[in-house]
Length: 113
Length: 114
Image (spheres, rainbow over the protein chains, first blue to last red):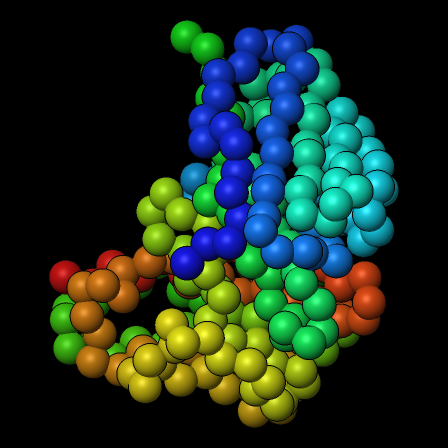
């Protein structure tokens, strides 16, 4: 089963708003990756984090590797309609546990009607 | 387009039939991963290859599933005697490996077992 918990499970955005989401784990991770997935497509890599406390931006997106190494955060500033989609966090615990990425259940970003 | 390519994009089959999917990774990538994703869930790891060697398999990969990467380039995933529970999106990803590994995904193969 999933080891990563994403919050919130879904959210509504209005154009221009800033939005935040997070990912928590009971295990320590040494890599965090954030992906966005559109319906019927594969996940697209947004940001990669490799060091505790690291803060990385990609355009309007900013992600942070939590200092406890058990969480990560993604912020979207000044949201636009194309930000709609499902955002997944994914983490890797390290070589001893294999190279696989474990994914969270996703945060669904929807537009306010 | 030099991204990860998967074929077919969609596959509808009857229960009990065998199906095979193909993945062509980004050309210089030595690692190739297979994931499965069901509706409303995140992708779940199935298996991965370092060049032609299959190095890790998930317990999700029952004996009806087999994956190959014969020349360390493209990979195939075969499901024998398909069951309705096999219906899912099958995703392939590739990477260069290394300490700061990034996985790049294809568009997936959507399997429907009737």
